[in-house]
Length: 336
Ligand code: UDP
Image (cartoon, rainbow, N blue to C red; front, side, top):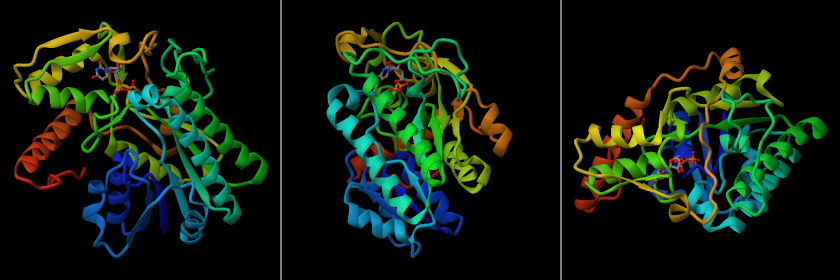
């Protein structure tokens, strides 16, 4: 099969590209490197089954050419990361909505299956966990920038499902819950790489709020495995699925775990949200996926726990630091 991955030079996309190439598939990547990085895919360049274009998915002609030779499109290109959303709301909203429109429009012309990556953010500030795919979404007011991300991804979901219902374009939507692992950058606020780097450098570990908020982190290797199984299962078309883990940890516990795992001398400091992000920032207190739907369809169950995640992120970050001090670009063992 030929698989087109939008955002394929990003954290999740590059792992997926590698995984599919290992399985003998052909992979095309389109990425504008806005949050992705060429380093993530440079080691794939020599693979004969791999091709890439550094361009925006809003380049209609190029996208049409790539869609034409693809059997499936896995649409991961998006503006992600809470910090980016707070700092660049226009870019977030425009990228997420018009980028997905462009991909669906191009795919519809050729009737190619599209997998659309969404996010657990769409559940908003619901408190009754776990979150089921058909639950109501509880979003904050438009005056609070954070919710623009959830809204933009909710529109993407509506659009993908509308293309299926109205135009019979096969689409699948999946909501990723805090996907983490090697290669994720802390640049846009993601907590696991941030804490690991702070701990490794014996810097202050910055816990936002009171640290009692919790998340369920899921290893990227479990996520991409699920993505591919969904793509291959015809019964997933026209449906929405959660992908994540149910191992819940508070952010303060995570900070302590990161610190203990590397025997760090870091201190852990609580930082109020309005200092960390912006005045009136609203965080979610808990976020746990209901996994019954995806488990029933593809037998999904994450195989790696939080200790495995920390182990992999720590060794990636250690190698990255070593490679940087030796003047190389990329650590050798970034694969999962
Ligand atoms: N967080 C933190 N310190 C950081 C970055 C994030 O305490 O340096 C918190 C953040 O406020 C949230 C949780 O960690 O409660 C997860 O943040 P992330 O941005 O990784 O993902 P989110 O679940 O917010 O999408």
